[in-house]
Structures are given as structure tokens and as C-alpha cells.
Length: 171
Length: 291
Image 1 (cartoon, one colour):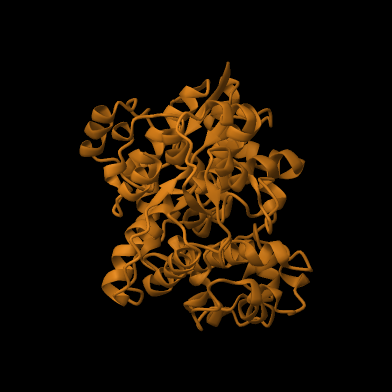
Image 2 (cartoon, chains in turn orange, blue; image 1 turned 90 degrees about the vertical axis):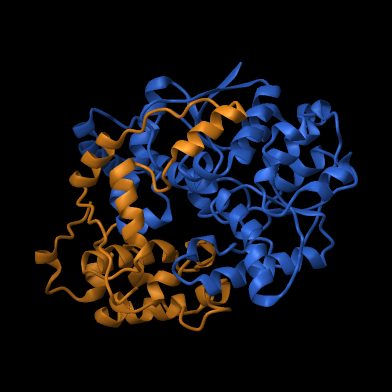
């Protein structure tokens, strides 16, 4: 696994910082053909999002624009672009790497704070209410088994999981 | 007897008893035994991968370890769970260096990924373990007059290199399994494009536009219902119709049924046992057509 602590990456070109992250390895193979943008279901509908543009800005080192902008959060992770990329750029994975870096830098839509908090607290991202548990019984569904929250939290700590915080800017 | 560890994930037990009930009843009828394992967790789907890809992959591997210890393959109902687990499983089996790295972390919770099991989607279990012929023979209530728009969703098919579910551009599994029930699968525009579910809470307008085009295209193709494989696609298209009505004043009245619900009905499960009332768009039209 490549290194990615902030001390080592502070003086790197941004594209190098991305390529040494898990998921970001293939960024520099992009030759800007645009197959990704023409395969993207979101780019057709939302002018704020264009995967080719995100890759271009990342390659050009426009770190602030990429990390603090809205665009990287508008990918649906549908993988259409990744399937079709003639250069085998793992575009959806590169966007995960960019999001991972952005979250460490304190940028993310507030919904990620909810996902992160639920995962840490319950080991699930959707809570199970008492009502749901009672309903299961009525439907004849078996009771839910205990969740491995403790193991999950140990793994989160060992892998440097940063719980995203809510920010006023993205409210 | 075929036996699987069932991976329910977060959304299905919390919000979609209709998926879980129909899948359990179907597999029981077809002779597949399901085991509910202790200590499974969230699969760590795209929203968690967006926070930390490495944490997510390691937690997926942890869940696979639990099934390995039980000596069971996993069946996932949700496309998100299937993708997270099958991707991690394939990546770790392929890449020894990655496996060694993840295993260093897993050692802290007393686990080791060995690479001894398969992660399968519900549809793959039906196709590989039961087979189309046996399904056809088991149908007691053929869906012969039903035109169904199959909606694969993204994470059954892609990334295909790791998931190996079907051809990502021209898949046939879903169509074949619908035909086995006597139903008529339809072609329609943008069949393989995203439902928009993962943009909810980030850009609700774009999310709804994606769902709306699926509703428009399947209606135009003359579908009696859309069939889904994923709880997120189901919500996007079912509850999405209420939002499309209030925002665009368009009424589709298009029932959304998971494939598990269609097959359960075809196998003769009583509709009253299937939690069909939990659908926002009622499935009555479909039930009348197959009565």
C-alpha cells in the first residue's frame, strides 16, 4: 500500500498525491479523450459535473478547485466511464481517492457526516428501530443477529478513518 | 442441499421487508438453505468508500472472513452489498500484496482473509445453483401476460472486471430469469443507466431527473411494471414517483417489484405474505394481471 500521510504529500504535485492514494493510481494515464464524459449519466443532466474535467484539473494540479468544489460529489459511482475508458483509467476509483483526500481536508457534503457517525455508532449506515424489529416478528422474519461494531471500529482506527464533520458552508 | 450465508446489509432489514421476505421464501421453496451469521457489519458501499476506500475494503474483507470461517459462500440481495463484497473478494484474491496489507489490519481483530469463498448476487444463485430449467418447472403461476422492464442498477454489473456478473453492455441474466417465469422482458432507452439513488442528499434534483427518465422510458415501452435488484433503485423509482408527481405533475402509476417478488409470486407464494403493502405505488395492477 503506497504512503499517503500529509507530511509526505505536502510538497508533491497534486497528481502525484492522487496516484499514491488507494484508488488514484491510474490518474496519469488519462489522455483526455472524453469517453468518460460521453458515457456519464450525470454529465448529460447537470452542467456542474464532467468526469473528464475533474481528471484534467487534477492533472493540472488545481488542488483547491477540485477538493473544495461541488463536482467530485456529483459522481453516482455508476462505473459506466470506468468500463469504457480506453486507457483503463479507473475513473470512479480516482474520484473516491479525491473524495478521501477532500474529507481529510475538511470538505464534504453534510450527508457524509451522517453516514460516518452511523457507521461508527451502530456498524450500520441505516439504523434499526424497535418498531422495525417488532415488524420483523409480525412478518415471520428471523431476529437480526448482533453486529460486529467493535471489530469494525478497530479496523476504522487502524486504517486512519476520518469521521467527516458537518460544516456550515455545505448546509 | 445448497447452503449460503445471507448478507442482508443495512437498508433491506431497516426498510424493505418486501425484498427480504420474498427472497427468503423463494430460496426456501427452491431448496437453498440460508444461514444468518453473527457479527456481520455494513458492507461499506460507495458513500463509505468515498470517506475512506481502504477502511471500506478492509471491512468488506472482515465480513468475508466471517463467511470463510463458517465455510459458506455469501448471497447478497442488495447490489451495493454485492458490489462492495465481491469487489473486495476479487481484488484480494488477485493481488497478493494487497491481501498481505489488508491481513495485517485484520490480524488486529483476529481475522485472516484466505480467499476460500465466493460472493454471489441473488440472481447468480438462482441461475448457477437452481438453473433456468428448474425454475421454469417450479413456476405454478406463470406471469405470461406481464410486460416487465428489467432494471439492473449499476452495482450488479459494474465494475465488470471484478464483479463478473454479466456482459456490462449487453447483459442477459435478468431477461432470461424473467422469461423463465413466463414474463416478457422489455427493451427501453437508458436501461443500463443509473437510478440516481446515490445522489440523494447531495443533489436531489439530479437524482430525481435520473429516476424520472427511467419512469418515462419504461412507460413509453409499455411496461406493466419495472423490476429491480437493489433497494436503492427500488426507492428511487417507487418513492421517486411521489416526488415526480409533486415536482413535475407527472403521474406514472408504475409498480416497482424486486425480481425476488416476481419470482415468489410465480412460485405460488401468497401475495399477502409478501409485504407488498410497503410499496408506495401499489402492485395491485400486477396482481390482477397475473391472477
